[in-house]
Amino acid sequence: MPELPEVEIIKRNLTESLLNKTFLSVEVYCDKLRYKIPQNFIETIKNKKVVKIERIAKYIFVTLDNNNILVIHLGMTGNFLVNHPDDKIIPIKHTHIKFLMSNFRVIRYIDIRRFGFIIIFRSGKDVASFFDKRLGADAISSKFNSDYLINKLKNKKIDIKNALLDQKIVGGVGNIYASEALYRAGISPFERSEDIAKSTKKVDNLISSIKFILKDAIKVGGSTISDYKNMDGESGYFQYKFNVYNRENLECNNKNCSSHIKKIRQSGRSTFYCDSCQKE
Figure: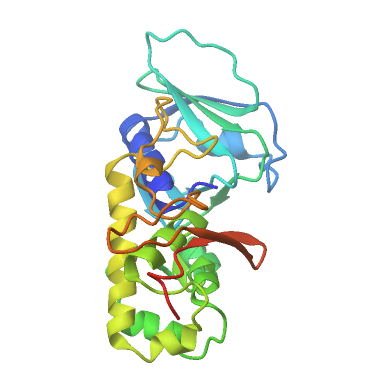
């Protein structure tokens, strides 16, 4: 599943192709994504201009000049592909929506598993109301600070790894970057959240590590594990910088450590860690 860095890359790609451009035509080939594409989808956006594109957590918000807002979530395998005016348009399986923009770029939404979605809100107020209690602070925003995280964790008895995956606590962190950030912070993925909250030093270190890892991943185009590529079809590079994720039984990258990376199932998901560098 694309996490914050991959969604940020797609948001930047969309900004380049869509911002201040008008939808000339829209074709829907399959309306059964995670949520069904509304019947008025085409008429709502056709001949409308894109005036703003934002990302919060794993969501992309595209605001039109009629004040409607497209909310996009890529799910497990969703992505966009751009074709420039001189490109040959080659049919691609699992293309569900195609947009022709006023710069004559063709944007295609492709989703093998169809867990992603594009829904329409009538105003920013409607968006805020919908996400108010569903989404925590974006993980690289100024709102994600020590006071905020202590307040979120102080009564949580769950493991810190599971807390980081809860989008109501912190928005945008997924399995890959939770493992990488906890390793960088030297925090065990099994430590209880309420115990972390008792140490301002640990909380500060964790926030710093999360932001560092996410921003570092953005710089190199995100992580390509299986399906993810940017809108020009290019893979990310951060997978070559992993310290723990997908490195089971390999030596720890810490020069002062002789341990090997371990993998366990934690609440149904794979967790990678070093039990020497990340002691409880």
